[in-house]
Image (tube, rainbow, N blue to C red; front, side, top):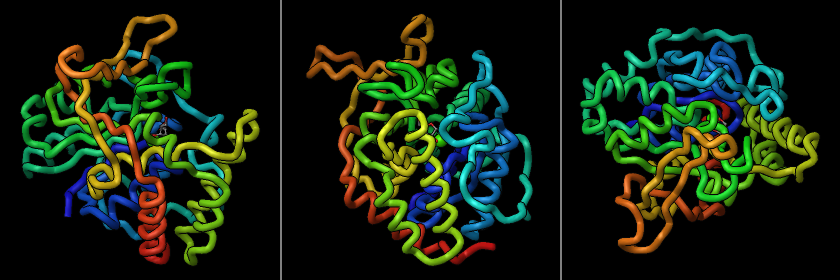
Length: 310
Ligand code: RIB
Ligand code: CA
């Protein structure tokens, strides 16, 4: 079993990612970062997800704000608290610490070969790598949901996780760690839609119901903003790249992030030129996902743990 630390900002898709990581991997720990909602909210959401799905794992909260940029949330997507939609149980859990970066450094120095799976802004990961550069040679890899080789979502060209903290993304992309990228060009192949909501509702247990209500609320928000009732089920893709490498095809590419462009700040520039024309690769760029298999795996993980919590 691959041993995984998930760094997240729940959001519904982060919650699904946690369940998938716990079912198909060995979820070692969870760290949180401000993103979809402020740090306190996403941390509560991570604790609730672990409680509802019975995940026996520590949660450590981390960066409240990006390295340089002002804080930025996405209430229009996930609601003000990040978990709009379901009736939620009273929170019975609390954080193990508020020092996610120290937790990452100590845990990775204590065990070689861990996977890092960031599914929010990369602030915690960048701070850990900057404080302890030796980590990049100790992790098995960093499988992150972020960026895009095509369209953006929170700007014409930038994806939310990277746009929130481009400086952190630049540090991670230049770190030398083995990097696996699940960008929007990949995650838009794996849709959350009313059909998936129905399949989640067909799974008995409180956990599946919470995820179904979260996803339905996400689709309502998309529709309210004039979109069709679907969207990428982004964050689980970063987990499946670790636990089921056959589900996602990767190609080595050079990826960098724009920091200065007035129109393009936060854009990940994926060099897809063929052969020697391209710059030296630093990322395994995920470009194709078997979305039928991915969907089945997500439903399997949710069904397995939907009754496990309180
Ligand atoms: O752009 C999608 C990403 O931003 C996902 O990780 C979602 O949870 C939000 O954090
Ligand atoms: Ca996320």
